[in-house]
Length: 210
Image (cartoon, rainbow, N blue to C red):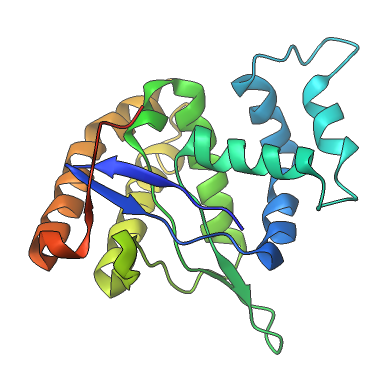
């Protein structure tokens, strides 16, 4: 399994790890045509070229989820680019998928392509996996953020949906503006929650996020 940590409002918050058993469902998400297109955009791959590196990378390891190449793609696409990781479980009786941990990073807002990708992938997660809950975990305490964290996440998705889909805005242009406008509110809310829990329960950031 692998994990990531990031800086937000002066704190380092560690996201819950993606377990091996959750690699396959996440990989399935990245195989979708829409996400392959966004993968090409992010890594500056010309979709009209005869040699489509994006599709080659994805196809080369889609039948072998244990390869280093596959895990590298998943890790880079979710952690390095989007700045958030998810852990999901599946109910064997209902097949309901659960998103247990997710977080957005300010660095994902530094490019329109990164923000567009973050929106589409998160939208897929929340809409197509029978979304049940969203928890954030702080520092080494692994303390769930609980209902407040879930409401915060749903609120952000709600803002994006209302301002993007319902109003027919362009993801290439307006989404970046929307996210940039919303991030200060989200980051302050996260910082206030961490402060209310006490600094001893989280690790202070050594530096700033890149």
